Image (cartoon, rainbow, N blue to C red; front, side, top):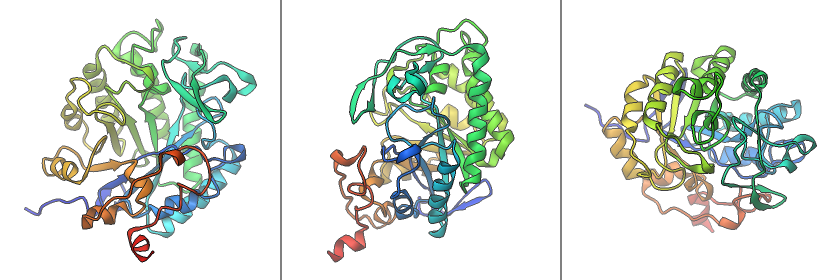
Length: 364
């Protein structure tokens, strides 16, 4: 039997990826006027096009869906046009890229909402977290509960955003159902105390996430649709009393929809992998298509999990920031550069597109 490695081609739906390394979505807060992607973004993504698959930074489906300053959207023609320049640059390097679709729900601030409105949520429960607005981290605002008749509009915003992403040249989209944002808020009963058809039972709390996924699949096809989930991550103040039952059910339904991949944050987002008891292998067994593993992976752990058949692709986030050629560095066991934490969020080219590839760094 031929041994599998991270550096072999992989078939994802109708796409052939050059390797099994995925660029995880990384918010960098550099969008310009009109929430159009940064003028430097085409360079940033094309520098990292050697990843088998890139998943873009989280991108709001509407102004209501925004939760942090200077994050890009995908709901205006100017945004679509700017994203097309980025996808052209990535495809020019033979890369593949999905757009992550985002509605943050209650993780927002009145200063980011139209006419200073309250952020929206499944229930009027304020999140125990902060957001980045007016160039500083501040407490999120008190949300209001979405009315039942508003939920079809949320579903339609995701559907239209997916259509816009394909118009912008993306190879597909990733629905952001993780990290305590709107869809995850509905799923987890620590944030959702509704008593209608979208609250209470496991099935009801999963309803909005599944309706969004079905609408996106109907619009652009299952082979172009992925989703990200984080069953036990406490990020942005969410919690679940029944994560195993909840996410076993969700993944069964996602599998039935035939979506191309399941992107799973294993443990606490950006934190410990063993944050709470959970059988991630159960999700792997329930999902017939591609499983993308995320959180704390290095080459050794990814190779081990691949050999064991526990995952198909492996997402790397912050290592890609200062290592645009991360795939080559992993392949050759080259040292990894460290990023400057002061330039992670906001700013321009510095700390964004000025990290050199290894060959360029050695030439200095």
